[in-house]
Length: 231
Image (cartoon, rainbow, N blue to C red; front, side, top):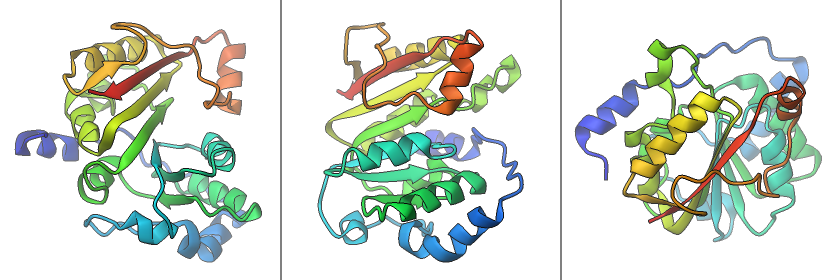
């Protein structure tokens, strides 16, 4: 468990800059039309996800889902599990809600809120079968590295929210951040590398190649995946 000092540090971390941008009329309408169906209002108290989803099933959380392309695909092709998405930027949330409504999805709920606070207060211990953090903001400048979401207190907190043997899947296209992720995870007593100590993974089939990733690959960027099980 994280202690009070670590929790206070986590609450100070802002691993994002809230530049909302302009939502399209369709994205704005998504909040008016679909939020009651797909949205999770932050309450600061543990949620009964069985009640929200209307069933008991393994739960996957994607932290920082961007425009929702990967989450939409995963939830459609993995109907036996329920998906929680956490994203602070409104246009991406609106875009994803429209995509989910178009196929009448029933296994996705979304937070538009800070991921640390959601994990601390809304998700009870042992809730998650899997957590995904794909292409988080790398905070390139050294003075900003402390804002990276993958930090020792954060992965310790996340471990408490995982079921036994739960999987954490990290991915980034910024090599210095990949090395940082590896160092943090290898030093954590709460996680063990799925392959072998110190090893990156090949891209698993369940992580699709998004438009964002394809653009980076064309520019010559590498991509690094890490898979860890709760120890």
